[in-house]
Amino acid sequence: MASSTTSGGDYRGKSHQVPVQLYDGHPTYSCAKCSAVIALQDELISKAFSGRDGRGFLMQSAVNVKLGKREDRSLMFVSFITAYVDLLAYSDSSQLCRTGVHTVADAFCVGCDERIGWYYHKAADPSQKYKESKYLLEREKIVKENNWTLDE
Figure (cartoon, rainbow, N blue to C red):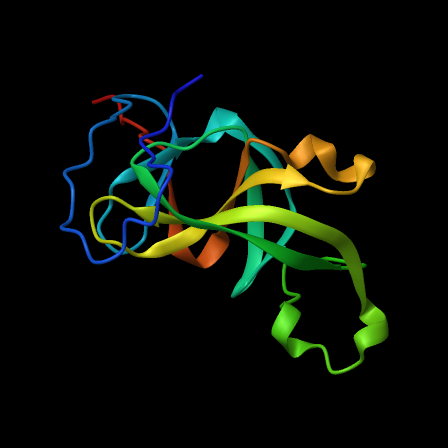
């Protein structure tokens, strides 16, 4: 498992950092904006999550990220998720369910400062504790890199 490059405080307004963790030859997820490696595909826990801008992936760990300020948020999820469902498409709030208040911090790519998701510090509801110390990466902010090679 990889460790993450994070800071406890709000980093915003500070200069960009050079990505420090690479996984040569391993399938990864990378930042869609600058291609910095963000996570190993093996660290994927679930694709059945919703982020701010659509679908999200719950990840065991992430690298080359820095954290913003901790804050309490009341988070929700879509009660039925398919590959083409987007949270913003719902006008009927009965489609949404609250998962409770979580203490989270936005996660930003160290290479380009793009907000790529958030980090779960704490969950108030005991049924949501499994999210603690995990990352939610927004699907639209990352790219799947398979690192395939063709034999000649």
